[in-house]
Length: 83
Image (cartoon, rainbow, N blue to C red; front, side, top):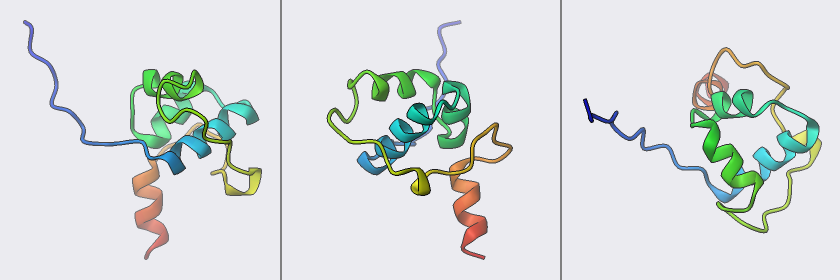
């Protein structure tokens, strides 16, 4: 016991924070947003309550991904878009 999982290495950028705030404003569920970005739902709450990236404005609605639930993460979506 006492073993922790390896850190994922995923970091939410200021741009991500704007998209997350836009998704929250749109009414997306926190766990759907977290699944899209591949992070713990606690990081979504940190952005919502200005713990991470305070003062970032929500992204405009046309900049948001489609509403979840998501079967693939943001990274997978971006990789498929590049093909």
